[in-house]
Image 1: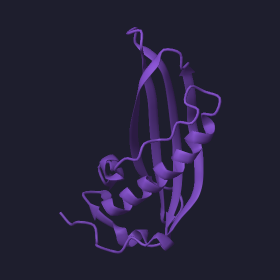
Image 2 (image 1 turned 90 degrees about the horizontal axis):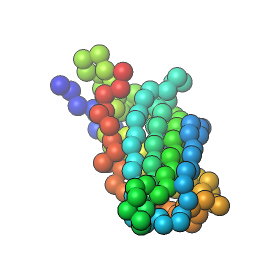
Image 3 (image 1 turned 120 degrees about the vertical axis):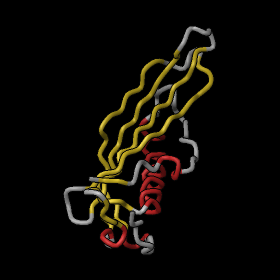
Image 4 (image 1 turned 30 degrees about the vertical axis):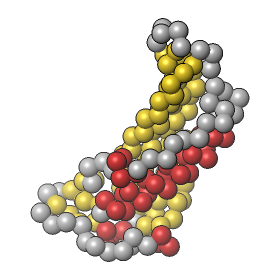
Amino acid sequence: METPTQALINPDKIHLRQIMQMGFSVQGNQQNAANLHTHFSSAVSMGEKTNALVVKLTITVRTTSTRNDGLAARANFEQEYHFQVENLPELITAHDGHQLIDPRLVTTLISIAISTARGIVWAQTKGTFLEGFVLPIINPAKLVPNPAVS
């Protein structure tokens, strides 16, 4: 199996073209809330335009109740980040009918998406149980999905 080329990941060739809010919900309240838990997941797909990639980022924040009666509150954020990567063909390798995207590029795009989401979530949660909450810093490489993209 061929591995993706070792082209440089050049930030000057990466452009964030669009952010789409696909879902946002906050349920419950902060009374009796404890133990804040955050979960991230991601998916990457080829975009419709030339040299385009889409990162779908899903973030779930939940708290447990101090009364031991289960969930106190939950928030869900789902966003799509549409990127154009000028040198994308240099960072893709074909294998078994799939296009393998260099995981370094995917990690970079997920990192950009999470950093951007941090500000969006902070602004969207004003007036909710999460007011003032800042998304934790995580290793974006842990969110890199299987690099095969059809």
